[in-house]
Length: 295
Length: 284
Image (cartoon, rainbow over all chains, first blue to last red; front, side):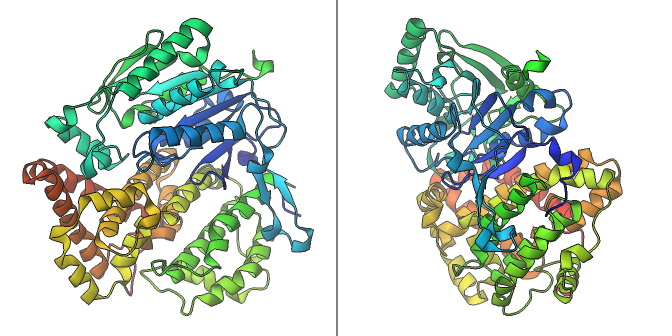
């Protein structure tokens, strides 16, 4: 029988890799009761891990936010942002939502313990969720193109009683009004690492200033605004954080969105917290419902 | 008993070790892949992330995988420390229960906080097909084939590279995949730099961080070959990148970005050397 887990791990989120959603992973709060699900959707050329670099570590390391995040399971969604059309990515995201919200489908959280059992005949498959979940609050966090994917997904579920309609939206540098991911260099410009280098140089070239509106994006805006007016659900309103030095996306918002600008950041760095820039952590923590005994 | 502790090791088996028990594609270099994975197991037990008794069970299941490695990899493919550690395991009956483990205290807490994320980053590198194709070409492609490939770099098709970045499953051993892999390598180096920079800020003593770099950073040092001909090839790949950018955007654009790109890559290399290559690779 294994020894007891070291104390430090009893309060840290557990890293769980999804099999059915390759590249996506979860940070599961090590408690039997959790009220919040926070779902992160990266942007064009991004990555479920690197787009949000340090988020995963800081939620447990930064004392100022860790009590809040202790009541949240975090899900980092990976999709083929370079290969597939947005409608396909929306479909993938909706499958991801359905697997998690409002109650996680346990089959995505099962791990076969055979490799660590002396007798593999004892084989059993167990859930890594320490208790049943029914998320009272869903927070959707999108970066760049990820914001478009999120908003289209919500529109897809506008008819009905999906908990997505009541979700909170936190968008970082959303590409709601167009972007220009053209060519190899356009692709690399969105990479978490090389992107910071390329973006800072290329913004002066015409091809990279040509951030076009598309009819599709206009339709997304008009439909979202109309439904917001009709239903008034929080899922149709976003809180946006822009980087002052963003040369990738057009900076505009929907009628009921609220936005703010951050100095000293670019399109790539705006959603990456660190010890000198904890703002993204605090913004999302503000949307998380605290544990009832802390209210 | 901790369910999550068992789940961590079971997950590690399913996502890393089990794959290495199967037939591997030509571009996977089995020896260092297997030894790196065992290195993660060793370090995970050492800091308490994995349970030692369960690791002993996994160790028994690992033996057929180890036998698939015809010859144990030597430096620079693995560090001397890891080679020694694995030899000790092989001589022992209950290897993980008998090896020393970190005592509870600040150093163990420090490493435990970081371990899951360090493993996540390493697992993503392991799973990145274009990046590993590039590693194979840097390490194992015969000189004649490398030279022949290089002759056709000036005509590399940037759209083909873009397709491979978009759909890594189509990447194979060719020039567009090599470039896609190179660009992915740089991103993994960036991820590593970010992680170790963070780890440095969390260390209460410099010696703790240095020890962490030597042991944990050393595990996947082999994936970025920065010694001997591997380094030369790695440096040559910037020419391939230049060819693609010039073909797509023209020389004016390349001239504008060449210097900052070079500076960026230099910083990534320096960081990789600092965080992963602190143990010297004698006998390279």
